[in-house]
Image 1 (spheres, rainbow, N blue to C red):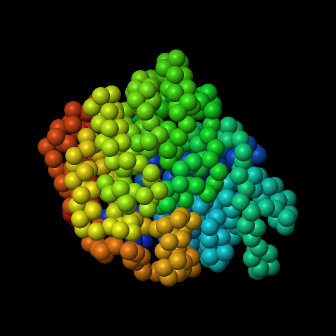
Image 2: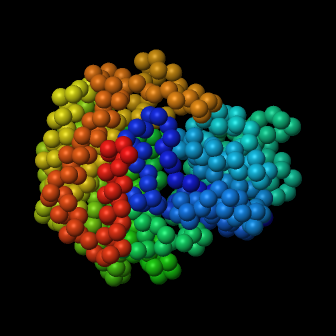
Image 3: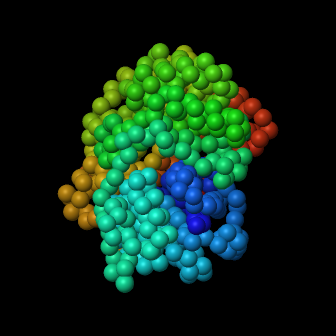
Length: 470
């Protein structure tokens, strides 16, 4: 049996993303981690898999069709999230019409809105929740007699009638999760912060133990891999694929301090010459951990700062003090020497012109090397989305799934500015932050190679074009 997995990075076509339409080949090409995981699950049950990464391979649609035809798969798979639904659905429709091959889809959006996703009849099958348990059962039935009755977490049609088992299954032990990186050309991937090739993205955990009201990662239970298990994957990537740079995509890699220290110690003990970046909260790190991260090769930490307003931070359930933000960012950058990126989010209930301007000034005062400013988009299965539903918004993403051509914008609730006005503030914030001479000098100082310089240059041009709207 053969399965093709097709990946196209999001263009964020939905009108709500505004200035966050930041995806560009010059910003970065990130490997399709979720599909690499699915590919590994399939290979373990003797399925031959092909991954077609449209962006990384710079493939035109005719070339994609040629690749599919040459491989002749029995199934074509896609992963769908809420923010890329419209774009991926367009690909699914075209591929199904031109190949007539059965389509299977999984991912967060299929899990949340399974009936609505499956209402698009060119999608033949769906996987609900994590794939490790239902996918092998589905493949077994698909190979045998296509009788899927009784299989949990699967959507399918029989005689034109749709059947969905909405059970969400989670594996308790994630030590055995693997990624089929041998199916992709790892040298094609990088992002604007990459200092060396080859590059990949990695996950050391699933879920998140924190409860920020804008995040949906609280719904799957938090599970993390052991330090030894995770470092083994780092070593395998280095030895097998010459991957020397990786970005840990955990929402909060530093959630378990003991494990982080163990990971850092093992990297140093094993002499692994790698560089890496992580995402963190300022209240989940301390001075000892920051030094350990630096010694083990971590060169950039992304901190979720979000706002300088204590009341807005409380609504977000960030539970962090402004003094803590200042101390940790300063200690990370100026004492230890790790680069810092700050995430900032405008548009939460209580936001005003004054709070936005204060947050921008706060961002400029912090010793940040990079900053990302965005406007709140309430996503399903988050507390802030429930807040909007309670105030009469209606289930926007359900409607959007049923009617992907819907261009309605989610207007912000309990704020004094419109979404469009806040997007303008994002442009202002980015201009102020990235046009500072010290910021430009720092980027030049960190250039390690011609390749690094070219990526930074192209990325800088891309950022500028996005900000000025050309």
